[in-house]
Image (cartoon, rainbow, N blue to C red; front, side, top):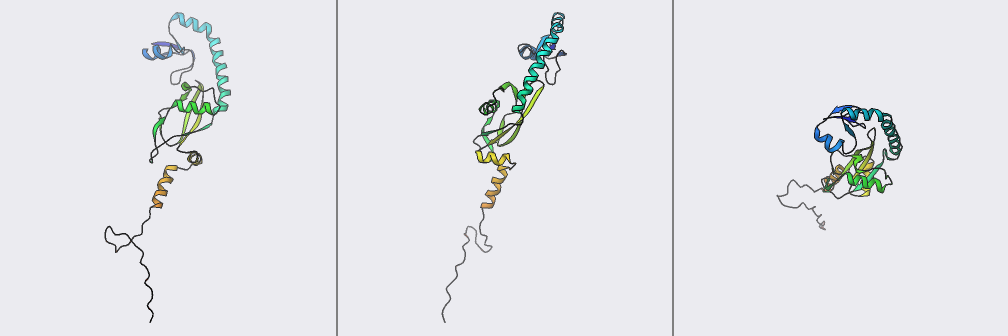
Length: 198
């Protein structure tokens, strides 16, 4: 289906471009969300008559988004979650969790539709998440997923908490080695026998 774009859409085109997309994408997403018009002679005339207004509205929205971006760009949020010893979360961190954390941090102009999370976060660590405040304005925030606030601070400093945990476990497990011991025997330090008096 041929459509006229009413706003910039990533990997598709800019305002006023006439592009061909699959029918379902146009009918179910672009047309109901007022991101495009069907490409016919009547709509082309309507678009050309309103082009200046549409572009001015877009420029105003982009300006608002750029102002909002200053408060969001580079923001770091910490999410405390339970996880296994291997660092896999019990559950996952989804878009809703990121938006709720941003709202708790005082950023109220971000909605779920603006957060671009390619896949849910299922492990501990520090992740960069893209927030598209406007089709032409995108910023990056840092999501720090940890088991405790102390771990979150270590991860923020660049420490790999899971690697350190395994190193500590290996360092803590030491056993005396006796080459003459029988299998299953526990190594015992030899007690010094009292010196006999002559």
